[in-house]
Length: 504
Ligand code: UDP
Image (tube, rainbow, N blue to C red; front, top):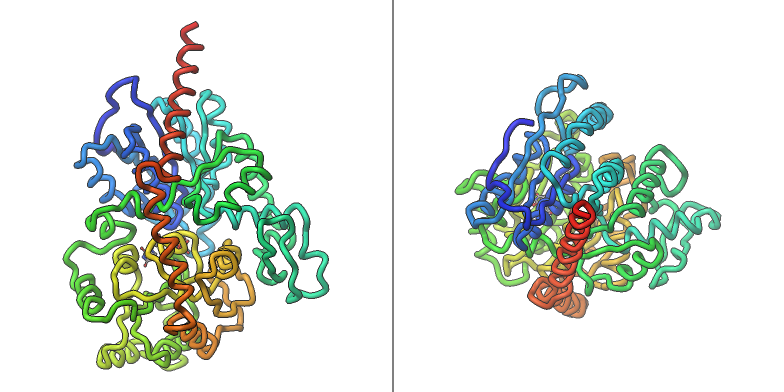
């Protein structure tokens, strides 16, 4: 236990919640946004995390405190030395060496007791913990309080995984590339064995972890998703039915929790305010016509090999469209071998032609997506980005890579019909790319189709309808709004009846 930030708990009338995010940026961002929503609705919120991870979102919490919300971060020291890691290596992020992963898990295991005690000491009335903490359901049971589980994925992705677990459709086809339909889902969604996550294709240690997560979900009070009813209503209903659990969609959390520009700018690994680069992209974007610019980004975790970066660069330059590309360099040695300075030369060239803008590392994605000049995305279909692009009313060239991206692609392309697939054929482990790369022509063709004024018009219209629905969902009387109000009411009743029992 190191320090506390922000306001103090005031009275026993107040509902007290503890939020425990996982140690990776794209799980932290939506769960912290969710925590902030509960604080916005009068719940006293404490977020427990480690020092490095708190730096990702502390600015947002400080902003909320100045707004009078009862929210703070409780920082616990990550036991880096005990597990043999350098201080500061305590998250699963793009630069985390693979050999550190098991040590970070070990660190989390060591922290478990301390965190469990905090649930008690901080007198939580309920806890909201990431899916990757299945142990927390037992911790909550010991204290007699509800545990809500946060899913980083979509209802469709969880329903699809459940369908594969139950019916093994991939075992009934002859080859890795033969298509099969995912059984018993609201739509006839087709996939190939190669597009399934490895843990679903055949059992591995991750399959066991996912089983434990599912078991813990079934014993939880319910689950929370960064989704909204109108986005995937069929899957929302389907999921609750097949799981037999309660579940609430509270999204789009990014839209709801970050209504001011200051919130949007503070989000994630943002640079210090007033940085030159930040102004640069905004000035550049503001000089472009409406819906003319592509936003090209592959989330917080991805680093393509050099050869793939070359294909993307050529496709973007050849597309004739304006673009903002959030790029991370991979292996310098590889770049040196194949011609050093390619990306730097590319950057100079597209700057001179005024066609493109490169952002190195981290981009203020929410601010960029809401800019009128943006006309569409090229994206890996990370769930947060799908929700954020829908919220912005934008179509996407879908390029799924790892995690549950291939399922999300099905939602975007086949169900919502607001995407054009780049033709990705194979699910890969995070940042393992093998020898196959997506060629510039395939990238270029998908971009051309999405940006085409006629071909893309219907897609754009559908995306705009969804954007309106997203905005309505969080307004008074909207689906996500009603969900959080109902849930808080329920949790208050649970607290009340617990108090009465203790009194009797
Ligand atoms: N993000 C951002 N700037 C970046 C990269 C990512 O703001 O340069 C945010 C993005 O808005 C989203 C999250 O980080 O909220 C990425 O989550 P997603 O599920 O899309 O992808 P992942 O990082 O899990 O691959």
